[in-house]
Each structure stands twice: as structure tokens, then as C-alpha cells.
Image 1 (tube, one colour):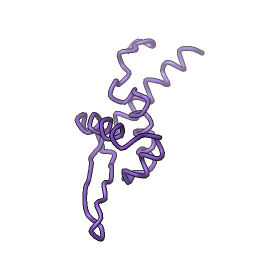
Image 2: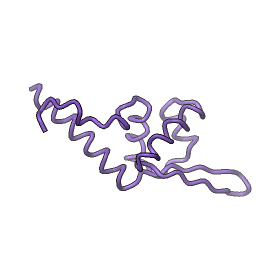
Image 3: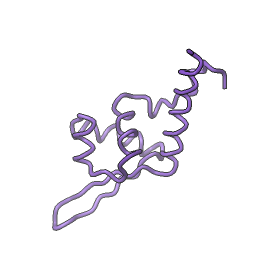
Image 4: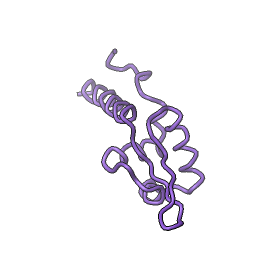
Amino acid sequence: MSRFDHTAIDDVIHGRLRLGVMAYLSTVSPAPFNELKVKVNATDGNLSTHLSKLEEAGYVRIEKKFIDKKPRTNVHLTAKGRKAWIDYLTSLQSFLSAAE
């Protein structure tokens, strides 16, 4: 990869909200949907839309269940998602290193 190959940046992750989701899930996985919503400052619908894109890419897994008859949605970072996150950070680091 050339040092300035902007095509190496993963467009699925690079969106601001999805970037926040991936960053948070890399430290806390699984995360309850409502907690994640607060952490990335999103609405239910907006977060759901972005999670769908991450899920389609195989980066997250959505788990829905009931606890005491109340719905609970947890979002898990998958192994593929963790690798994509590390690759994304590595690409950004190569840009930073090239700028020195």
C-alpha cells in the first residue's frame, strides 16, 4: 500500500457515527443498544441504520432477547469487525507516519 492510498480506508467504518460505534465496541463488547446510543449521541433510528450497515459487513452482531419480559438488544463486535477496526487504525497510522 502506498503511504497515501486513501482507498485503503474502510468506508463502512469511516462514517462518523459508525466510527464511534466501532471505537466504543472495541473497548466494551457487547454493549446494550441504549448505552451505545448514549455514547455515540444518536437517535434510535439513526443508530439502527448505521448498525445495519455494520452488520451487513459482518463487523457487528445484533442479539435480541427478553429479560424479565423486557426486550434487550446487545451489540457485539465480531472477530471480523475487530480485524477491520485494527486494519482501519493501521491505515490511519500510516497516514500520520507519512506526515512526519
